[in-house]
Amino acid sequence: MKIFISADIEGINSIVDWSETELGNPEYEKFRLQMTEEVKRACIGAHKAGATEIFVKDAHDSARNIIFNNLPDYVTLHRGWQGCPASMMAGLDKSFDAVIYTGYHSPSRSNGNPLSHTMNTKIQHVKINGEIASEFVLNSYFAASQNVPIAFLSGDYNLTKQVQAICDGIETVATKQGVYGAVVSKHPNITNQEIEDGVYNALKNSNYKQNVIKLPRAFDVEVQYKKHQAAYSNSFFPGCKLVGNDRVLFHTDNVNDLMVTLKFIL
Image (cartoon, rainbow, N blue to C red; front, side, top):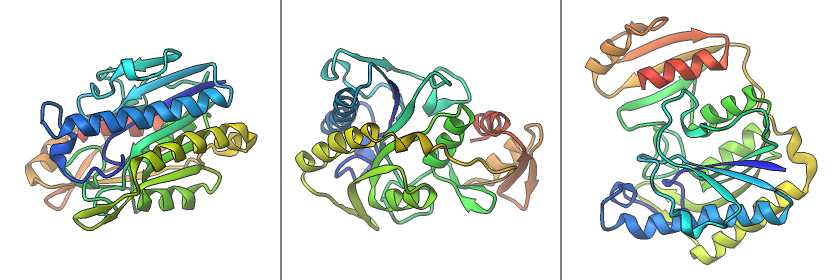
């Protein structure tokens, strides 16, 4: 069994402020450790369930967050940004049996996490077919294009509810609950164990193979920017058009074009 893990940080246990997410900030170091621990527990759970290959994509900001020596030696780690449209899913292809997400967070314009956003903080939102999209949605569309199912996700409570509404077969663990500008978390020892057990349970049950996210027939996309100058500039990308002062629209029928366009206009 070959497993792909995409790891973010804003959805890990108890993280609440941007300073705790930024490489070089003193507060960042302890949350970097927690991010690494949650990934480690996911790897252990997957290995116990029979995974023989585990590929981890460090998918937050610098993509230089995970402390590799703290992970089991059967893990392969992808650090830095490759530059491909897959972005947080770089390295995923049809050879993988399942995808696992750790540290994921609520989408922009959501009160589910004080750090809610989608891809970056320069935009108000990305809407796909009228619905605000999370990074989970975007990345799971890419996984679906490779016909790879989603087995597990950990992150804030609000996101876990959204994920289960999309596909109730996905095993989830809520690491914290956002309360506007605050978060409420169980002790990390508890949620760390829940992640390990949740991944194990998800992969031991072959039902996860049914969790390939259904792709829309077409993608009508709206990106609203915080700065009208950014909207104007990005509206020149092929297929995009400026609407009003701060929104760019585009339409596509396939995931590859979706990911390529978002790579250049976000």
